Image (cartoon, rainbow, N blue to C red):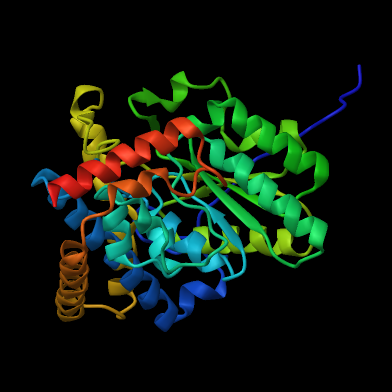
Length: 358
């Protein structure tokens, strides 16, 4: 009997749970200014996230999906992308959007119920938040096909969760990417839970990275709490795609420290000890320990950074509060080139009601 196929999945980690650096770490790890810049970016994302949750809890924001614990993946992925690349998010990648130039106030406006908030300041080719699970992978595959068809040196990156890899849309996008060798990176953010379903109950695969093999796509696993590893692996995959060498799949391991959304109570299905362990190895505190050990950071710098983050977030909240109420008629816009008659009638009703209210 002959073996017709073999595969292996590599796991990349340079900065371990104790903030110890591996001997084969890339040059980025020794770049003081860059490492501090990454830490500042991750801290800013965390400060924004905490404020968004507080706004929701006080009735000033709609349902919101926290990114607590995902900061290294978000910032690292964003730093790997060029402005002309295409990013397709789920509903949780606030950190990537912020790093790509979207304003905090615009993200707050979206979660506050104003979908005009998606007409944001980031790259115009990026896709908006995607609430349905894994459908953004097909959108990204389409963008990657267009990039290849035009002969452009760009790539697309689709973020999805562990639960997304159980969806048919993901497998369709993966198959298309492999068959047509599209310039596409699948970034699977494995935070252990698809809402309340643990990853081991979603799949029989030993890793999510190995799901790439069926599509003829190389798969790699990376410690998603290690900003150095995330930057290195995603940068390499994006560069490979731009060179015309085809798609990649990266499984980034992390933990969703917060609830699935502010409408969830994760305490119903997760053990408190599990969450506490995750808090000990999460990405922001890990990087801070590394910077401190290198003599690049201290309490004074931390206090100054937290003040800066607080000021930046507070200004964004003020901008969000000062926005005019959205026009209810906006819900009918940008859906059809010409509205169907039944929607025209509904639009007239909305406008009439608005005039009466005035």
